[in-house]
Image (cartoon, rainbow, N blue to C red):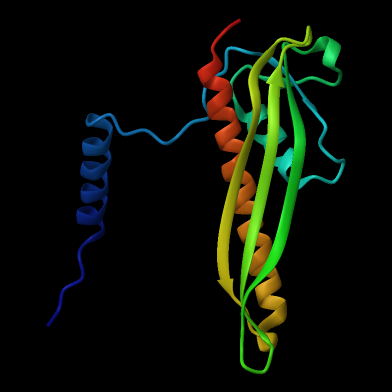
Length: 169
């Protein structure tokens, strides 16, 4: 007969695992600390999901605010191109789509309000492949939306890491 582990043993094992992880220096990933405290986002369209994600991650960074105008900013992140696209990657013999490629791209530069360029125009890109079926079109549409959200979060985090590497002026 199999015995289930007691609640006390499970709690003890969880406490031991927590202690071991804390002792080895493990920490959850935090947003990078930025030397720049007021950042203005420029050139993004009003409905840009990537700009929304970048704003969200900037606000999550300690001591950072998103400026409303370039004049009140310490740093300007300027979008030169922000695009998300679906591409057909493969079709069946009956010309139905069987696989799609999703791409998210951001081409940006970073400068001070005085115009000094700190990061030259740089392109970041994310690509994901997904299978596709007409029978589950609605589910695949939701899957694509989740993949785009993940790609935008990753691109925003890459921008933040580059801003953190800049250091103070």
